[in-house]
Image 1 (cartoon, one colour):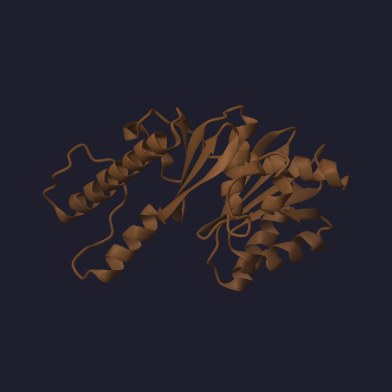
Image 2 (cartoon, helix red, strand yellow):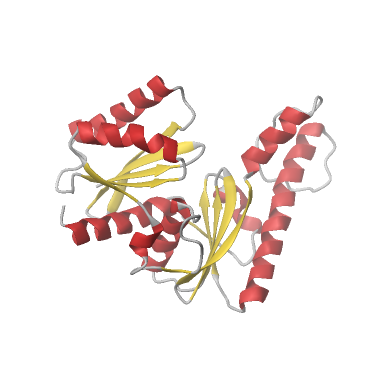
Length: 257
């Protein structure tokens, strides 16, 4: 089974074989159309040529928060005669109860939540460090909602673009809050600023929902922030793909492709 996670910044492709995720590939979502199509075609063809789908389903499950891209990928899947489904929240209601507007919830947030439920964790806060930083709140196995605020890299790019004297700096952990250079000041501001925001939101969610959740981090910057987030979190960079793996198996069994 092919897993495809279409995000605002990157598209992640992977193969699920015997319930194991392997051969993960990433491409830039915002590439020029012809280059983008060429890259997607190359990845899918490679999956098939290298026989990564041996003893697996010739089937793809798609999570997308960029609907305009879906058509291009679906066309390529059809070219290779790969059956597919596009994740829709209503289709997982038998597996995950959702207290949220089904017309607005992102497919990636659904996939994250399904992965957590599948791992037998009933109470959790999932923090996804993507283009946006999202929180998913699950209590007693039910998705209660969450919140969304600007992602770290997006915020940094906006700051650099709108200021004349500030230069780009890599996001990294700093050991001191008070910095003595502009570069160190940017790094300290983003690291400790986001740590303070995240820990503050976690505390508010726990107080509001009156539960003791596991904190689960995913997304590209999760490892950088993990040591200062409280309570101590679990880091799972493949959480969305794991959710797609579960959802794809459910779709496949239900529809008997």
